[in-house]
Each structure stands twice: as structure tokens, then as C-alpha cells.
Image 1 (cartoon, rainbow, N blue to C red):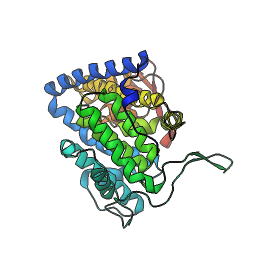
Image 2: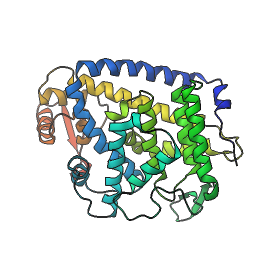
Image 3: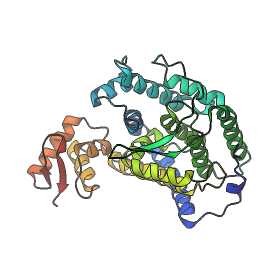
Image 4: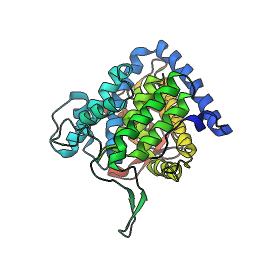
Length: 348
């Protein structure tokens, strides 16, 4: 079996891009702590929106979808799921809620990862919930002409339990002894987890939940206010490309995790930047019209009503629509398209 080790990572020299991303993230962490002291109540409104977006986006990456209304009901009102997709969405909601509330009481061990996986499938009758895979799985791509290609073969089922134990032990050691920067150790752990692909189903969603858990446990709380899953879903191809580039030679221990490290750090930094943008909007008391106007001034090119809604979480959708109508009437914005394709752009 391939050796899992942080020893090469520990002694590795990092390029300026990786070091720059890490420095920029720590700078944003300091700003976030300041913002939270200044406006804790207003920022609390971002939490529910982030939970909804994270639940929706992480499932959508795997093709598990429902309507916006149902997502809101499932996450906010905790309504009973009606079908398989909603059962999977409700399970994600449950695990995310546990991580939000109790991250500091969830150790990084195989046993706890299996328990979280069991909760992920808690609304379904899945005999493999909370158990590592029983059959060999493959990471494959389906092309437009219909043919599929195996991109990566994860570990065999018999190797999986020990491999999960090993990555947890090594991660806990380097974090506990402060041997490796957490912002390097976290992407390496997630990358190894995805290469092991320990479950018959739910590996992608578990990897995103574990990313949030590891970040929280190391003091990076941006995912509480800004959905990392939504960021990943928006640039899904970059996620798969970075993972594929890092997986090459993994079985022989010749892989290079740097593309995945850079991808994940870039995503975390983008989330912190979003948090700063949203804080700017709620920093002073403004009317709905002024908040929407300021939000549109943060957008370049075409944008949708949903883009503005994300920047103005404390305003109702009807207030946003009303403000957009006023901005069109005043000649500040132009609208184009019909139905779901409606978008806006600034003309001033």
C-alpha cells in the first residue's frame, strides 16, 4: 500500500503563489474577527443563507437537486423530505448542522468520519451508510459522444479502513505538533481522502463537509458565513482539473498535491473576499435601495437577481426586485433577457 506521509510536505519549499495565498488568508482572518466584533447580529443573518447555499450547491455538484423553495424549507424549517433527492439533501443539512454547532467536539478519526457518513444517509434505508466501500469504485468521465473513461482507480475496499486510519493519524500528528501549516495540511488530507474514495457513495459531499470541519477546527470560520460549496460548484471544472492533476502518480507516492492545494486556498480566499464585500453592505444602516445600488456597483458586466440576493442577504426578494426596478427607471441599470435568463448591467 502507498505510504501516506506529511514528511515530504513538511520539508518542501513552497512557491510564491502558495505562500501569497496563505498570507492573504491570514490577513482576511484578522479582518473577519474585527468585523464580527462590530456587527455580530447582522452577520448572523449570513449564517442561514450560507447553510442553504452549501446544502444546495454540494448536492447539485452530484446531480442531486430540488426547487429553491424546497431547499429553503428543508434547511430552514427542517421539513420532511418527499423523495430520494430530498432525503440526500436533508442528510447533508444534518451533517452540516452538527459541524456548525459541534466542530470542536468532533475528532478527526475514521470512526467519526463513518458516523458523519451514516448521518448523511440518515433519511434513507442505505445498508452501506457509515461503512467503508464493499466494491471497487472508479473515478470516470463521460464525454459528449457517450463514451466513458476511467480517470483514476482509488484504493481497493480491503485497503480502505487502514488507509483512512493512517491519513487521520498523520494529519492529527502534524497539526498537534505544529509540524505543517494547517492551510497546507487541510488540502493534503482532503486530496488523500478523495484518492482513497472510501465510500460506495457520498465521497464528494463528505470531502466538502470534512473541508468545512477541518477549517473550523483550525480557526478558519469563513464557511459559516459564505458557502465554500457554492464557490466550488460555480467553478466545478477547475475543481476536477486540480484534483486530476494532483492525483497522477498517487499510488506510487509520486503525486504532486500542489495544484489541489492552490485550488482550495484560492477558493478559501475568494470566500473571505466575499465576506468582506457583504460586510461593507451592512456596515452602516442603509435603505434597501441604497444597499442594492451599492451591490450593483460591486458587479462588473452582467449579473442576475440571485447575485444581488447573495450580496444583500438581509433584504427580502421583493425589496430587491423593487430596488432593481427603481434603478432601471432612473437609468442606472439596464435589463435584458426573459424569464430565467433575465440579467442586468450597469450603464452609469
